[in-house]
Picture 1 (spheres, rainbow, N blue to C red):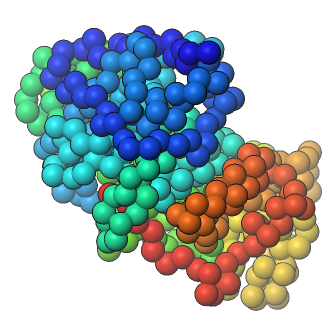
Picture 2: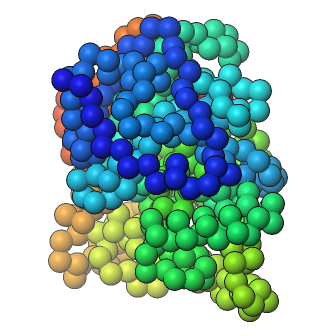
Length: 472
């Protein structure tokens, strides 16, 4: 049966200034590593037994109805503005309206150079493709708004990084790939007519009730601040929160140097290119507000009274800070079984985090141990924990179902950094068993499945991952 993707490619119908037409570059010997059949069904894709599946999702063949383009955007990268970036190694095949009525992009990542490649080879190597596949699907299972992985395909070719490595292509699904940087590129060029067209398109696609730039800014701020609070409640560190990696849809995108906390520390960072900790764990709360301020700046030219707009947009950003604090408190309170947090609960949460920091306690396992009643074993200062525990028990006395709330707020398993590295090393040697096992384990992250107990353990000292890499 022939693969059928019900394309309806609205972004490609925008003026060509938004993108460059670009076909994927064919590869030598495509072979499928993974195909996400449930997601394909959700997207309305049929004919998934097509023998050309690997070729289609490696870019060697194009599915009928695709209109392949590379999207243009700019972005602040580690605080420095680059006026033109764009998809340097990705091609948007097109869009579908899924079975829930939601318009979603289907993109090939690592499919060859584009006009925006900036002298890069346009390719991805196997490691980052498998990392993004596993982590993005894990984040979805954890309930985090995120891009999804539809397929991972080996290319049968090598790419050169620090050494020759096996190449691969990821098929990524997103509510859209519109970024803060997409607005920034046209604002920086003072191309306000195109900026207005982008606003109208984004408003119609994502925020039909937001009729003004202020309305849309407030909605994006709400989604993004809640997203980052959700990340932090899971110990997730994105690693490269540039404005070109910040979506208007409010989804997590680009899992290059991402990682999860093992031992808790608010200043923890893993990304090898984040030398000064700009995107460290706790810094993410400030950075998302900074990113939203850059979006606000790009939207100002679309207003009739720009001085008034600056004042209004500043108030929106300040309100977003309050939203983030409230959402952070709500999510961490839920991890303690508190359904309706009071202001004083921030102290209770903070005191536990300080005990964890002082004793280098594992973030995920400590919170999960609250569910199991074994958290004392995770804390170095047992006497201090006993005093905290007494306060906590008193606080949740009147909670209706604290155990149930904790069980669905504290995952038993996350994509451990050292397990991801083990998976990549095995797959480079042609063994994908751990890749598939991790996928199975992470599909139900709130269940304590005994057959995956080994994947829950914190790393030993010699297993610790200290740095993660983008792979470009």
